[in-house]
Length: 473
Ligand SMILES: Cc1cc2nc3c(=O)[nH]c(=O)nc-3n(C[C@H](O)[C@H](O)[C@H](O)COP(=O)(O)OP(=O)(O)OC[C@H]3O[C@@H](n4cnc5c(N)ncnc54)[C@H](O)[C@@H]3O)c2cc1C
Image 1: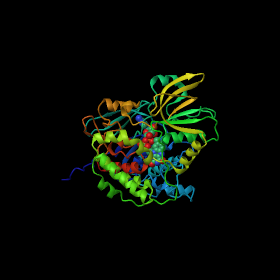
Image 2: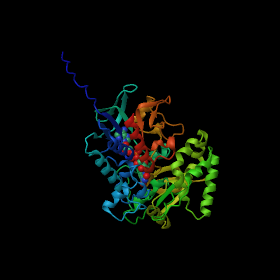
Image 3: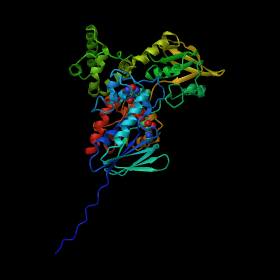
């Protein structure tokens, strides 16, 4: 007897991973997935609201005044190839050194090129589908089931797994509702919106609400075209300003961060005591305090995770403003230009908050309350620009997708409002604290888990680890 010929088992379609958002986090996760795709195949679907894939909020700028705030040598998008970005820069300018601060526009072009190169992998195992559209809803079929992403244009995408990489949210309004109403179109809520600053003329006086890196960017963009007769006033709660990176070419000192962390203990008080002592000792030895912050950086998540919730809250209340200006530094050229504006009187920085805004004769009459003062001080400006930076507040964001996932309990904000509850494997935790088998998260909202999570040197490692985990899971 002849055995009946058996037909081969039906071929399983390749796994399909959808990524919502194609800023740095989404694009680099896609790149890592494409580079590591298994021989049986992988489909990656990258969905972004705008057609500018791999740019996102930070690297979509058209202004050449906007430079990276991290030296080129530490901006490789690939955690396993530290030289990649410097090599890319040297294609167009062989003189670029690892200590150089190049434009954010160039960095966006680098990410785009890297994504295209990963897409053209020559063994055909992996495919990349790019979709321009806004994801407005998500349905999952239950544990282990597939997910359906609903897009604003009415279509949908089915995937085995979804990576949420939607980035930060638009800045929150720092003005009370009555002041917002009075300011009307003279208030610029989101300076990152394309063309947002276009209406501001060289003779206009402008109040910048915030004095961090966003205010530096806005001041440089407004003064890029040359001298302006209008004044710029920047306010923040304490009037603290970002520090400069070390000058290009200066050699960082070799400090042992692990040894320091071992001494630091688990309470905020102990950690700060050891840090202050180490700063004093480093300065006494003639070293740069930046080296200390740099040496702690890889250990910051471990230090953060040691703190109790009460200590984390204490840190946010009392230490955060000082930490932000020391840790999130500007490129020396941006710092120098900002300082020149201050020295020339074109820009002043004040510790103050807005008490009131009235529209008067085609301008805005603002009452500022200087820090510690009982009274107010008047300021007349043509525009107010919100420079408080992107928001991480899930509860107050306007994204329909996030609102739906929050309402259904599939996403959960952390207790301190820093971001999203995510486990060590990047699985999103639901309202009951259970890791989702279908939803992962990567991006700046990992700050809730790690505190240090918003810049390329951290996000590239997260993208690599997340891709590895998705390909074994
Ligand atoms: C102005 C600025 C400058 C920075 N400069 C540096 C620097 O020099 N060096 C450094 O190391 N770090 C820098 N950072 C920090 C860091 O690189 C960024 O925070 C990082 O780019 C975050 O990337 P992301 O992809 O998570 O978010 P984003 O860049 O915000 O990208 C998210 C993307 O998702 C899209 N999206 C959101 N929701 C949806 C949806 N529902 N459907 C479809 N698409 C959606 C958005 O349109 C966006 O394109 C900077 C950050 C900012 C804000």
